[in-house]
Amino acid sequence: MPELPEVETVVRSIAPSLIGEVINCVTCENDYCKVFSSISPQLFNQSVKGREIINVNRRGKFIVLELVYGFIFIHLRMTGRLLTQMGPNDRSHHLTAVFHFESGKKLFFKDYRKFGRLYYAESMSWLNKKLGVEPLGPDFTFNWLQAGLAKSSRQIKPLLLDQSFIAGLGNIYVDEGLWAAHIHPATPANKIKPEQIEILHRATQEILGESIKKNGTTIINFQFGAGNTGEFVNELKVFNRAGQPCPVCATPIIKIRIAQRGTHLCPKCQILPD
DNA sequence: TACTGTGTTAATAC
DNA sequence: AGTATTAACACAGT
Image: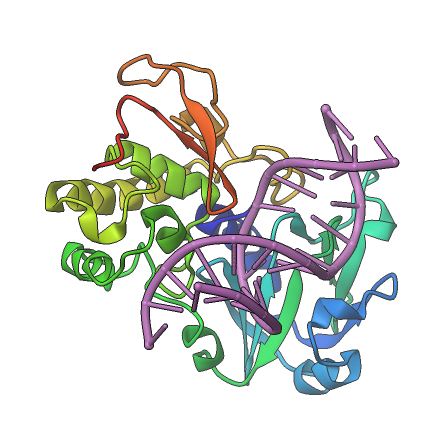
């Protein structure tokens, strides 16, 4: 399940082989035209054919291919993978799209649940208007977070998962950040104490940064490059650790449902306020 | 066989 | 307007 650190890892792994390539065409595979979202393969190709990729970046959980004119945005959703070559075990019926470059190189978009999508837009504003602040960017300050939480009565976890508020956090890193700050995930955002907001702010940045250093987290599916997996899975404190001891107090971690999402927490460290 | 889990959007209800 | 809930998407795994 790629979140910000995993998408960043993918970007770093593919950027060197994509920059400078000129797109001949992008085909959808296995009749899966939906990979282009709502537009037709013809229209998508009209926009990208002959254009050079001049940079590869990330915004939230989107991979951004900057073209000499315009942008391709790639969202991996849960199981999308970008491969520069197909391995012997990569079954072709999981392919949803292929980039064909004029050099002869290819980029394969493999996605066995087929939720991943490709989008084209002429400017970054298409994406920026959907997404909130970058948690590793300069706008993610303590003051901004405190003000944002004060304005909302929503439960903190679904608020942090809302990409139009903060872009890039998903189930793993929200659970980890809330545990670090001793915040129960169902706490109304506007009831969280400033001291806890301060820890949440710092912990979120630290956890994301550390995870990027370890190439992200692999629970089941995440891979990058030629089948490498993320090592941050070994640093997780609560996510996917139901029944195992809390690293702080040894109380068994529990898994509950909040806003229809599996949610991991320490029932002793993270108490819901009255 | 029925259910779950993933991220996101759209639709709907309050 | 803000918030919460649900379905839809697709499919491997249990």
